[in-house]
Image 1: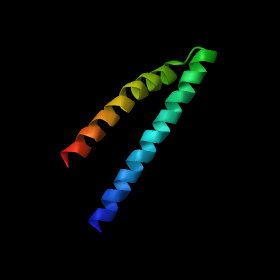
Image 2: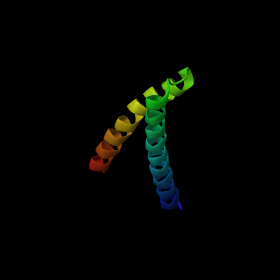
Image 3: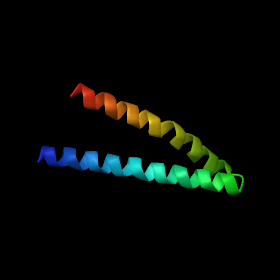
Image 4: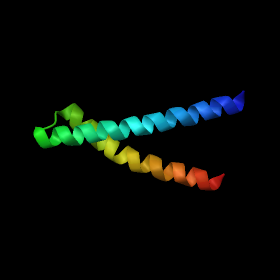
Length: 65
């Protein structure tokens, strides 16, 4: 049962990662068309930082196990 929840957690992490990439791309396209609002700019910066950090930590954890 524990392995099922670990697999489910890995799947949800992957889905969150993919959706954040798509959202970041959408914000980048919107940024070319018009100026982003403060909330959009905040999310743009957060996703710009979170995506590479997640990738690096996932890779490090993958090598560690």
